Length: 284
Image 1: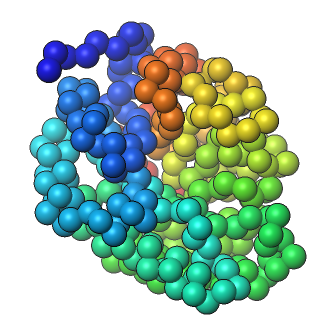
Image 2 (image 1 turned 60 degrees about the horizontal axis):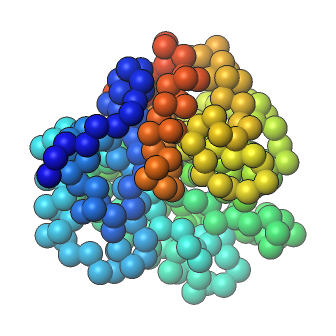
């Protein structure tokens, strides 16, 4: 296969080794040549079907290949229909099972950290917020214990949450250095009524990763950086002022958006910012 040349600025090309790129497990074979050519760092995403049908030998083979080429890894856990705080004990049970299956892969791939959704939806759970949180903590606490034993970080991502209060409550109740926050910029911009600055102020002390994509605030469009209205200068100014350097993960949902997003990120990312190469040495 002929090498692929991407139309990248010099700064964007230098970012390739400093950021991660989301990669659903089932798409890994399709993009393996590009991943190897550019030694991309990946956020491997696993669905329930991946966890049920994937063979351990295939997971091990992929992990060995990625390690040989020097790709750093993070995980994104399954999330469709999962709800750790559900009032239905069987839904909580399957949520535990799926997350346990994900954690079983950690010793194979050795990711730096694992990102999971909280499963909280204010449209359905706000009236049951307190009991929902108590039930969810019963699911998260054993996983935090496993994260400590495996010496990795478990990061809870924002999706539908209208503000940072739920995440803050979880972190205050489970004050482990192995539990933290993944800020999804697109979700915050499209779904949250709370300004980005307030999310940062409340959760900066636990911020371990940022999912980077853009939108105009109307929906979670996963546009390239700069194609929407997210205030990236505000974000990076805040982080630099406070000495925070969370890992950055690009989340393009179309192949054509990847280079545009990488060039867009290079245009707004301060030169003093660093990313994936320092995550293991910069705990909160």
